[in-house]
Image 1 (cartoon, rainbow, N blue to C red):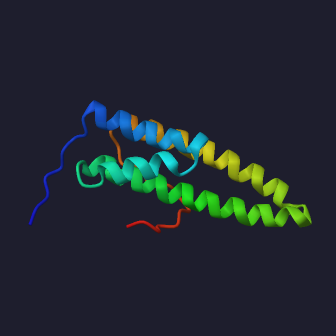
Image 2 (image 1 turned 30 degrees about the vertical axis):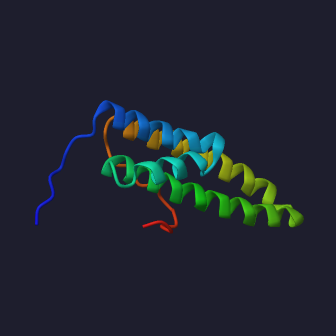
Length: 113
């Protein structure tokens, strides 16, 4: 069986871009909403929303661990690094999806398949 590769439309690219950027402010909520609404309708949007959701869940877990490590002062630095990495990687993902590319975040737990 062969699958036909289609280029995403401008609306698809825009929705994927906003999904990735939404994670910088609203954590996993935008990705979860988009994935639930579009997972059966549009493969490109569903894939990118799932990728953003997995990344934001990974960031949330890392923030919880860093929050616990604040007690020994290491957590303060880790929280800053996690916050900065979230911003940078979400922007890179948004730029990639605005071009119609498929983006995969590095160091991400793939919890949603």
